[in-house]
Length: 395
Ligand SMILES: Nc1nc2c(ncn2[C@@H]2O[C@H](COP(=O)(O)OP(=O)(O)OP(=O)(O)O)[C@@H](O)[C@H]2O)c(=O)[nH]1
Ligand SMILES: [Mg+2]
Image (cartoon, rainbow, N blue to C red):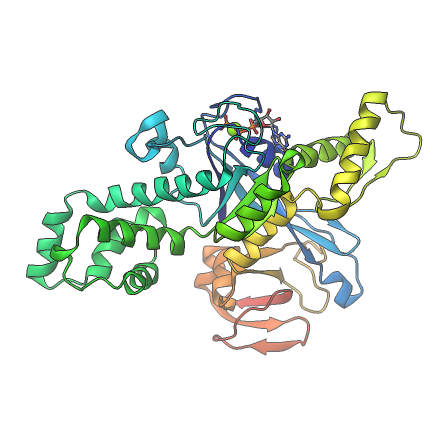
C-alpha cells in the first residue's frame, strides 16, 4: 500500500514527507528541489491489542508507546507538477509515471497562497489555492486520458467489431496504474456514456479519465503552510474543493520531530502538545520558535499525522491486523509478543492476510484462529480492525 504526496513545486511536499518519515529529504524555498522521488515509511496509529490481552508487546516493524501502536505505511514524495505536466512540461510526464503504484494521494497545497502556478514565491495571499486543486485534478486526469488515447480509435473499432468488453480493454490499458476492473465499470456508470466506444467524444473520454482518477487514486488535501494562511483560504478549500481538507503545518511537525529526536522535547506525533525535557537548555531563538509552535498546535495539531491516517483509514479503508504463530502466548516462533502489524483492505479475509505474510504461507493456508476468541475463522470472514490472527498452514 503506497500513499503518494503530490502537488505543484515548493508547497512543502518534502517537508511533509521528512516530518512523517524522518528520512531527511532535501527541502528548499524554490521549485524543483526534489527531482528524484523519495520513498520512505510513515506511520499510522492504532490501539495495540496488548491492552486487550493485558500483556506487553515486542514490536518488530514499528514502535508502541503506551498502548498506541505505530504501523508503517509507504509514502512517496515526488517532484512538483506544473501546468502542462501531462504533456511533459517540467518533466511532468516522468514525474506522473512515478505515481502509477500510488493507491491514494495526499495533495499538498500552499494554503497561504504564497506560491504561483510554477512554485515561485509570491506575496502570501496572492494565489488562490483552489486553483491548485483544479489544476492538479486536470493534470492527473489528462495523464490518464493520454494513456487511454493512444490509438484509441483503432482500439475502439476492435472493441466494436470483435464484441470485446470495453471495461476489460480499458482496464488492461490502465493496469500499470493500478486501475481495477471494478474501477472502470464504476467510472463508465458514473459518466453515463454509451457502450460503443467508437461514438465517444473527446470530452467524454476526459470525463471517463477523470472518473477513473477519482475512483482509483482517491485524494485528500493537506492545506499546508496553514501557520501563515488566511482563515478564509482554509474555509474556501473546505467548502469548495470537494475533498477532505486537513490544515497542516509540516514545518512545525518537522521541527517537533527533530526536537524530540534531539532529546529536547517529548512529543508524540499527532498530539496537540509537547513537553520540554527536564534540564533542557534552549537558546532564546529555539524557545521562541517552540512557543509559537505550542500555541499553534493546541487547537489542531500539525495535521501531518492526521492526513496520513485519514488517507489510510478513510480513503483506502485499511484495517490493522496482527499475525501471531501461537494464539495462546500471542507470539511468533522467536517468542516476541504481538511482533507484527499489517494493514489490509477492509473486506480482506484470513487467506489474503496469509499471502501478505508470505506467498508460501498463503499457498499452504488451511485455516485461521481468532486469538481474541480462540475460535476458528471461516474462509469468508472479513478481518476486523485490531484482529489478532493465527494462520494455520500445511507444514
Ligand atoms: N510557513 C511554512 N513554510 C513551510 C511549511 N512547510 C514547508 N514550508 C517551506 O516551503 C518551502 C518548500 O518546501 P519543500 O518541502 O522543499 O517543498 P516541495 O513541495 O517538496 O518543493 P519541490 O521539491 O521543489 O517541489 C521551504 O522553504 C519550506 O521550509 C509550513 O508548514 N509552513
Ligand atoms: Mg520536494
